[in-house]
Image (cartoon, rainbow, N blue to C red; front, side, top):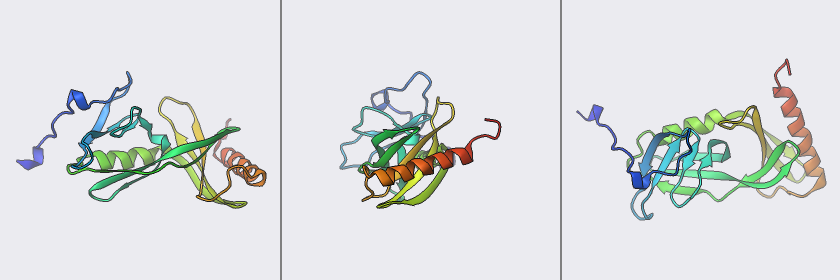
Length: 178
């Protein structure tokens, strides 16, 4: 009998303000002690309790499921460079999910599927990860560089190296007929 048990529908009061072309894929209520709320995965991103806006799949640097807690690390935009965004880790958010259902699977699948290219490189004064992400509704790839903690964000030598790394990655991933 439990095999065919269906999860109850998301209550209208818990439903985030979805875009016209957005649909709910999975959701889970947040456990006790966190003020309630729900985590909602849609085809366009993740809605977290206490946020008024959706976190796009391409804006999630890391998502970890411990078996009880979903921890999400969003990107924090540092600067817009020529053809890419410079980002760093925004403080992680953790949510206890007592009945997670399909939510952890959907989060992992959607974040992973958004990544088209990723490579970690040393740069003067630190390191960074060059990534190309797929963004729903946007043609082509969106490029970002996530700097490791402590890597300078304003060092001309580091920025020149990052510019070079992004240009090389874009050239290497460009379609042959472009």
